[in-house]
Image (cartoon, rainbow over all chains, first blue to last red; front, side, top):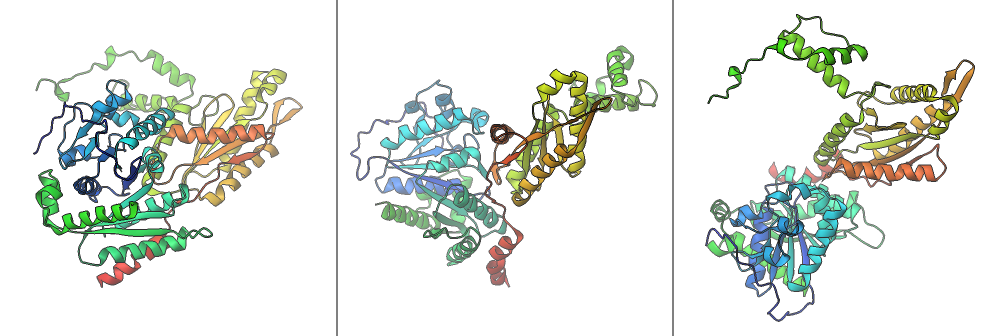
Length: 275
Length: 240
């Protein structure tokens, strides 16, 4: 249940009957500030979607700067780096994770690819194109802040989820991130998860506040209002801390906790929205 | 541990300084007047060599190597602060014709004069460098996007207004083309991509007829104090 030293390749060839769509929905999960629980949300959301019968892949889209391997306690032998350097096939690098979903981890050597070059652009695009037909959901996990690689990865995603905490620094960084997405990528809809909320209703309050400032400063383009949608409020919860410290999935070890329920709610919302 | 630093003794007299001292003398650098081969003297020599290797010999401006370091620092800073920073690349128009018609000494005079006039036009916080033969670049930190075109245009005008004396009774007018791009705000990126974008604008300025400045359209992504104030207005009220 803890250490998964995976040498076995995941069965990628789709044996399952694809339910409703031909290609996966791609959802980028980003934050702005680090340490807001973005990877925790991503991993548990993936598990929640998998529990609903979805085939899910989480891709470390910050190329070596995301912490997915740490959160999941995975020590993969084959990573995205091997795919980039053509030492392994994509199939070999897609690994099963605890929680019933799959991961594609960047690996430590990827830091050299952490800046956007035409080569990185082409490879990332090709990899996302290749995995899309094989999954129902592809979640793109990103590191702290936004890099040009992250921005490019987000541009390939159909939807974006921003994770923020009520802390002022997190709110400012989340706002800056959303502003960049709205002004540079013409996004008009972004999902919000307020993590580490201290009381019920805080998520709604924060979302309303961000929405107001966005409305005023990012401005409505004619006919297209900007919509920030609160998709989940995850309460600050002792079980989250315990799960993170033990490097385990909240959904597996504290399924009854408030935080786990909130993330299941998030998965339901996404499935409801996504059809 | 045997490899402790205090166990390493260096005999300064065993080191070769002739070439270094010659280089410094040639460059007109002040030689240290401390006790030769003493620690203070050695440090002064090292500092003078560092200074020499970061500067362009002809103009005294920052050279390409140290400009690239400055760009990397600025890209990282802007990724954190979200401040607008502008990069301009400036190229003397038809410079080859100056060299061909009046000789390389005249060409050098032109380069020095253009460098001097640019340096006078900029703020002390800006980093101006000579990055190639007749090519210059400048980083303007904290430059609001609405000022970008004005700054570029001002430098272009000052150079165009100037006359360079290349021989007795012979004065030349030179013009420059300018390309510019802002650093990506809030986004970790590389100086390479930033330079490429500014370069593209320089090509555009050349293609559109030279003696002009072209800047990449910039979408301001700065988070102003007003925005921050509004962001926290409600949360602060709640805290009271």
